[in-house]
Amino acid sequence: LLVFLLIVPAQSTLMPRLSIFGAVPDLGLIAVYLIGFRFGELDGVLMGMSIGFVLDFFSVGVLGVNFLLRSAVGLGSGLLGRAFMDMTLPVTFGIVFLISLVQELVAYLLLNLVSELQGIFYLFGHSLLPRALYTAGVATLCFYLMGRRSKLGGMQLGEGVLFTPGGNSGASK
Image (cartoon, rainbow, N blue to C red; front, side, top):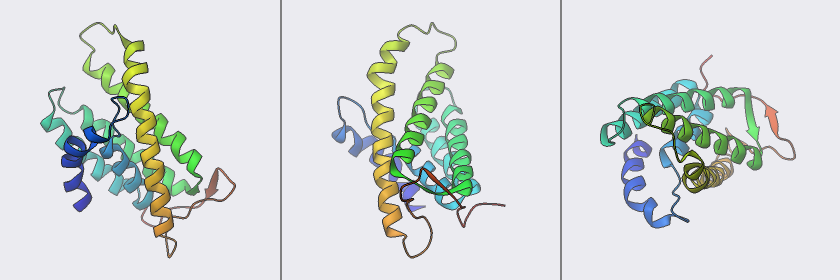
């Protein structure tokens, strides 16, 4: 609950000050990914639905796009967490990068179905790609810090492998 209450204000007030070349990390996506990966599909989907609803409520776009996309991220990360408990940081970076890139691209396409899709390459190079890289970097750092913090029980970082079979303890069966 605390994470949920801090994300939207931090995204709108703190993150613009930490932008790199105009790109800011997507804290909602990071939270949904980490919670889904660590605690399972149900918690990931619920966090995705909650954050997506709030983002849809306060945005001027099509209602429901963030709700659906964030829910899908929560489900996917929960499934990843169940299948692979330990992942190296480069794999985490790559997965979050792809998730962020695909989510941003799908949102753009859904929001612009009625208009021409001109400028997609400009958008990709100047908005989607930098934001996906930044989001993946911050998520990887968070994943690393959570792994170090939870050495007593739970998520561990894999050493020298891309994935280690396992599962998160909170994943639904």
